Image 1: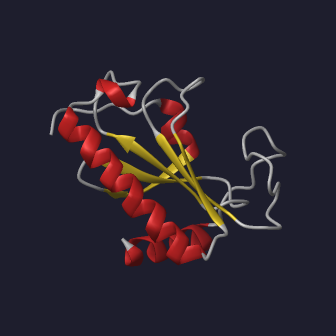
Image 2 (image 1 turned 90 degrees about the vertical axis):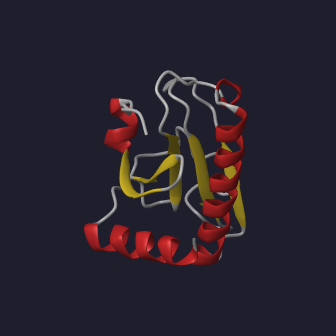
Length: 134
């Protein structure tokens, strides 16, 4: 695979737990929501349609695989998936577990309150549950 540079904000805000076929799988460092971020390991890509057709298929497959694992690992009411990129232009896909009664249910996670960083043991436990369900 060619060299890959990750945006410093994605690196800072997400803790790497695995490398899949195409993407890095990262846990967003905010324990209020089980929140995964998939970052395709391709430089200079900001839109899904910028990927090759094979990479588009891989991204869809990996997104669905992670969403299913997150649902199994958390028992969430709803899994939200989105690729926004208004602030961080590098292509990345958010996969967020939402549950009734969570920090801002049913409102959005973006811009709500102050992030609560994961404790190391909690993060490792969630990562293990996700990886077991992939």
